Image (cartoon, rainbow, N blue to C red; front, top):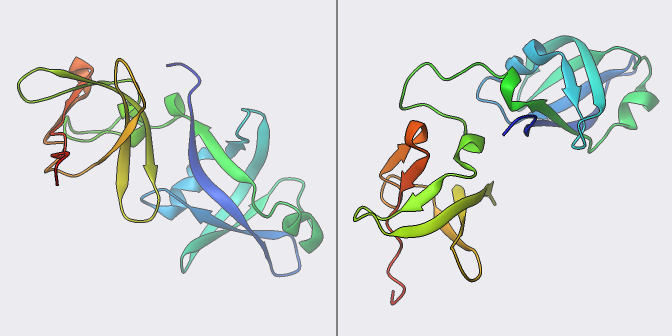
Length: 168
């Protein structure tokens, strides 16, 4: 899926009086944001071009081209920052993947029965959930745990899932 955008951060507001921006990151390494430099808006248009990034507790403080005052930085509050999937490094191990890579994969039971396709991945605060779109009917949510998703086979385009017992 070319040009797929991944959410990597959100602007939390201004930091100080000289245009620095406090950014909450959703990356494993918060300072990785500095490697992407040119961050995009949700629609794919240019958002921020970072010139420096330093870590602070729970966020990073960044400088961006064209943002020189506290008011300019504060005006960015709430802006979501994205990168193109193809701009991210490929995982080093076969067992590693980006959650976004799960979208579109076929979902099967261990016995090979098709449950549907991964429509989305969300975390509402209690852990990652896969939204499964069955061939017919409404989508449903599956906790993304080893118990419910014992195998992720990216190269084969599928995940093995154990659907929770509906009688529980």
